[in-house]
Length: 109
Length: 114
Image (cartoon, rainbow over all chains, first blue to last red; front, side):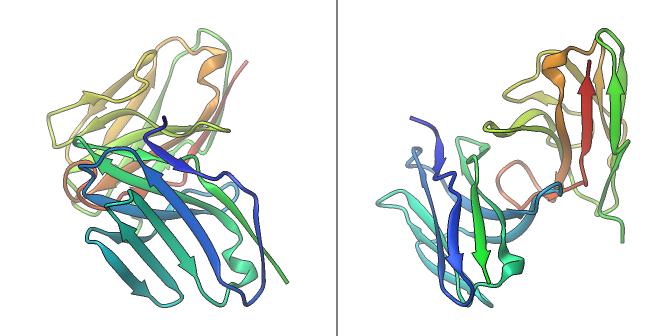
């Protein structure tokens, strides 16, 4: 089992809809959870991080963490074509940060 | 405000050649990292430096060496390049040790080894 798993996609969502990206992790002791966005040919950039169970909202983005079920998700409301990118989940466990392979998201106008 | 600066942006090497990738950050971060990114493999940690004067191996260190020159600079050296080292390399920095604060990435170096 991979330490951090994401559906590689592509995930296709119509403009204006909610995009839901999911990430599961294997280390129950994981403490920190990050979402990065990476446009094609560019470097990853941080969108959000979450440490506690529950939801964290920042503009159109909401991160949801459920430690009991070992998943973290990212919701993007009112999706825009500019949200089309690969989204990387990263999880800290055992003093190391592990990235998932990323989910490619396409927003269709 | 430059953030994390990597050089060069592109490089083509022949098998057996050596080169050094340079990285500098101006955010006064303690920790710095080198990752490689390959299709289908995600980001994999090569080496990291938790603080000035220390370096540690990551997931895929073979064929690489690093130097934490000072708090700002962290270089990655390929002593004898191999085609398997064709990849995109990212330098990153964070305020504190790995996983406890967000990473800030440089723009990447696209390396091809023929």
